[in-house]
Image: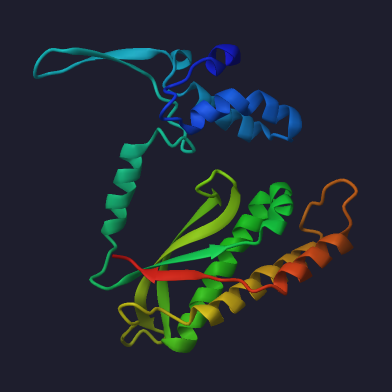
Length: 249
């Protein structure tokens, strides 16, 4: 089936992720370690909307015209699928929307940790969310005296399909005072001091990884020394990190 999929291309002028996978996936598997879950997802994406998944015929209720289409994989990782489900999710989130400004805040990581993340995805991704949330709430407590509302989504690759681990956050422009007595608003175009926030986030993330490492909670590659990972973490913590924040709209 894979051989047939590799020869299937949607268009030479409008490549999709599936097209790229069909062409390069066999060679990629030879060169890099692939988990069973990654193999399953890649297989689903490559098969999506091709003869491999079969097809169906639909008839228009108005004109009676028959239209054939290939079945989709419906995998949540496929960028050709779940558009309706994503739209429903967005509409559902609007129920919670308040008549206040909202901010787009992005927490990125240093690419030096990518290899460590591959071996410890669940542990480090959870720690990443906690570091972002805690640093943001701490900064809001200091500047606004309130607790923010945060919706966070993990992205593991960038626009060029390179490995780029970061978290996108939708953040309320203010929140309830810590004692719950009143609402504390941020500015329309200013949430908190992003320079101070960046330092808090960097230190929480790096120090937390060091603690996980010392406690034996992180799996290392064969032959990799704890001291080497500690040196890498110290090196990235010494760098300047930048949290991105700007108002929506």
